[in-house]
Image (cartoon, rainbow, N blue to C red):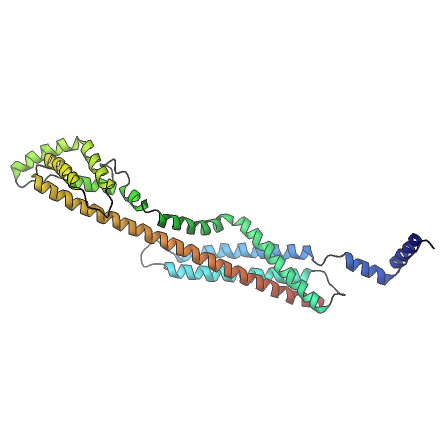
Length: 316
C-alpha cells in the first residue's frame, strides 16, 4: 500500500474521531487567553486612574499655604506612599481576578499546569496595565526620575549659588542682593548739617556714576569666597568710596572690608541653602523611585495570586 494513501486515511479517521478532534483543538489552542488578559489590564488601569485622581484630590484638600494649617511635608509624603501602595494592590487584585475568571477553561490540563497558567494570566494583566499606566503618566514618572538627576547636578555645580545670589551683579542698581551691598558701600555718612549738605551733593554725583558701582560688583564676584579681598582691590575700591562718600582712605578701606565680609556670608548662606534644597530633592526622588518599585512588585504578586483565585472559581 502506498505510504501517502495510508497517512491520508489516518488523517481522515482522526477527523472523524471525537477524541482526535478534541486533541487537535487542544494542541492548536493557545495557553494564553489574551481577551481575558486585556480585560483585566483595562480594569486595572482604569481603577488605578480613578484612585490616583481621588488621591490627588484628597492630598490637595489636606495642604494649606498658611502657616500651622494643613498637613506637613512628612505627613504628605507618608500618605502618598501608602496611597500609591493601596492603589497598586487594589487595581492589581481586580485585574488579576478578572484575567483568571474570564480565561478559557482548560479541562485536559493538569492541576499544576492550570495553576501556572492562572498565575501567568494575572502577571500578564498586571504587566499590560502597568505599561498602559506608564504611557499615560509618563511625564509624572519622568519628573520623579529626572528630579534626582537634576538635584545631583545642582549639588555638583559649585557656582550655582553664586550665580543665583549675584543675579545681575553688573547692574548694581537693580534689586539683586549684590546691588544692595554696593549701595551700602557708597552710602554717604553725615555727622552734621554742613556735612549733610555736602553729602547730598556727593550723593548726586555718585548716583550719576554707575561705572564705579558696576566695577565694584565685578571685583567682589571675581574673588573666591574662600579668599580675602586682595590689598590692591581694597585700596582701589577704598579710593572710589572715599571720593563718593567723603570718608578718609582708612575709613573707606574699613568699610570695604566690612561690606565684603557681609557679601561672603550672604553667598555662603545662599550656597548652603541651594545644596540643602538639592539634597532634599535628591532624597525625595530616591525614596519615590524605591517605593514605586516596591509597590509595583507587590502589585505583580497580588495580581498573580488573585488570578489563581479567579481561575479556581471559574473551574468550580
